[in-house]
Length: 82
Image: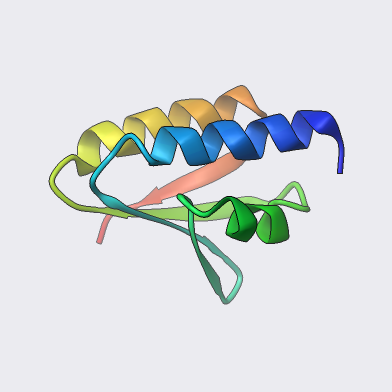
Protein backbone atom coordinates (compact mmCIF):
# COMPACT_ATOMS: atom_id res chain seq x y z
CA UNK A 1 0.00 0.00 0.00
CA UNK A 2 1.39 3.40 -0.92
CA UNK A 3 2.03 6.24 1.47
CA UNK A 4 -0.72 8.18 -0.35
CA UNK A 5 -3.21 5.47 0.62
CA UNK A 6 -1.90 5.55 4.19
CA UNK A 7 -2.44 9.32 4.29
CA UNK A 8 -5.99 8.89 2.96
CA UNK A 9 -6.83 6.29 5.61
CA UNK A 10 -5.45 8.42 8.43
CA UNK A 11 -7.28 11.54 7.22
CA UNK A 12 -10.57 9.64 6.75
CA UNK A 13 -10.36 8.21 10.26
CA UNK A 14 -9.37 11.54 11.82
CA UNK A 15 -12.24 13.31 10.06
CA UNK A 16 -14.74 10.66 11.17
CA UNK A 17 -13.58 10.94 14.77
CA UNK A 18 -14.54 14.63 14.85
CA UNK A 19 -18.21 13.60 14.83
CA UNK A 20 -20.46 11.92 17.37
CA UNK A 21 -22.45 10.14 14.66
CA UNK A 22 -21.91 6.52 13.74
CA UNK A 23 -20.11 6.41 10.37
CA UNK A 24 -20.02 3.05 8.63
CA UNK A 25 -18.59 2.18 5.24
CA UNK A 26 -20.17 -0.68 3.33
CA UNK A 27 -18.23 -2.54 0.68
CA UNK A 28 -19.92 -5.61 -0.76
CA UNK A 29 -21.04 -7.53 2.35
CA UNK A 30 -18.57 -5.88 4.74
CA UNK A 31 -19.41 -3.09 7.17
CA UNK A 32 -16.48 -1.10 8.53
CA UNK A 33 -16.49 1.54 11.27
CA UNK A 34 -14.78 4.46 9.54
CA UNK A 35 -13.37 5.62 12.88
CA UNK A 36 -11.27 2.43 12.95
CA UNK A 37 -7.96 2.80 11.13
CA UNK A 38 -7.44 -0.96 11.13
CA UNK A 39 -10.84 -1.52 9.52
CA UNK A 40 -10.02 1.01 6.82
CA UNK A 41 -6.65 -0.60 6.09
CA UNK A 42 -8.36 -3.91 5.39
CA UNK A 43 -11.11 -2.37 3.25
CA UNK A 44 -9.69 0.49 1.18
CA UNK A 45 -7.46 -1.74 -0.92
CA UNK A 46 -9.38 -1.39 -4.16
CA UNK A 47 -10.68 1.58 -6.07
CA UNK A 48 -14.35 0.75 -5.90
CA UNK A 49 -17.58 2.40 -4.94
CA UNK A 50 -18.46 2.36 -1.28
CA UNK A 51 -21.73 3.07 0.52
CA UNK A 52 -21.52 5.42 3.49
CA UNK A 53 -24.06 5.10 6.29
CA UNK A 54 -24.16 7.96 8.83
CA UNK A 55 -26.49 8.06 11.82
CA UNK A 56 -26.50 10.46 14.73
CA UNK A 57 -26.91 13.99 15.98
CA UNK A 58 -24.44 15.56 13.54
CA UNK A 59 -25.10 13.25 10.59
CA UNK A 60 -25.55 15.95 7.94
CA UNK A 61 -22.28 17.67 8.81
CA UNK A 62 -20.51 14.31 8.98
CA UNK A 63 -21.81 13.24 5.55
CA UNK A 64 -20.52 16.43 3.96
CA UNK A 65 -17.12 16.24 5.65
CA UNK A 66 -16.70 12.56 4.79
CA UNK A 67 -17.76 13.17 1.19
CA UNK A 68 -15.16 15.91 0.92
CA UNK A 69 -12.30 13.83 2.34
CA UNK A 70 -13.13 10.77 0.22
CA UNK A 71 -13.30 12.94 -2.91
CA UNK A 72 -9.98 14.59 -2.03
CA UNK A 73 -8.34 11.16 -2.17
CA UNK A 74 -10.15 10.02 -5.33
CA UNK A 75 -12.42 7.53 -3.57
CA UNK A 76 -16.05 7.24 -4.60
CA UNK A 77 -18.78 6.94 -2.01
CA UNK A 78 -22.54 6.83 -2.14
CA UNK A 79 -24.14 8.52 0.83
CA UNK A 80 -27.02 6.28 1.87
CA UNK A 81 -30.21 7.81 3.22
CA UNK A 82 -31.66 5.36 5.74
